[in-house]
Amino acid sequence: MSEATLEGEKIHLWRGERHVLRGVSFRVTGGECLQLTGPNGAGKTSLLRTICGLSYPEAGAIHWRGEDVRRDLPAFHAEMAYLGHEPPLKMEFTARENLTYWIGVRRRLTRAELDQKLERVGGERWADRPVHTLSAGQKRRVALAGLLLMNVPLWLLDEPTTHLDVDGQRLVGTLLDEHLAGGGLAVAAVHHALMMSERTLRSLELGVV
Image (tube, rainbow, N blue to C red; front, side, top):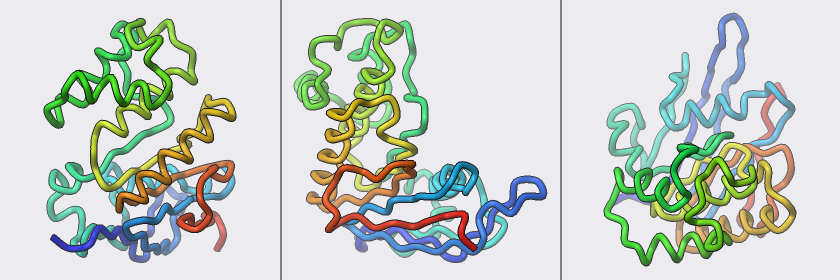
């Protein structure tokens, strides 16, 4: 299998009459995190949605392992995890139940794995509480546990530290560092710099022509 590399080639995207992405290009390889910065409306979320195939660009292409992702989107999706602004959680289910069903549709999951990842994000004390009783930060930690359980090389993250306190923001940085150290890669849209190793962190500022 070819090297885990994600590339964007002169991406152009419109929203109605608004030219959101203007010839955006980038390259991210294993062990790197690309941090997308820029003001509100600069196109950070639009670029993430374009990368994962939820939006189609009017021009340009996204390549994964050297191939256009649109040639086989299911194969690409099997190797990526997308975490948006709001975690994909069902409010009436517990944190543990959410992860069991969310991750279970992608791969077989053991109780030991589930417990380990919940503990890793600090969620062991409230793992069996309904999600609607959790704080916004705790819900974000459930989503982070899901990200770890997906066990995929590519992470696409939209404001991953939303609702998290300083300790939670540090946790996100640590999880990213560990993911990259294992050969993974990530693209993250942020308003504030991620608390992670600068050695593996690169930035792309959007909204600048």
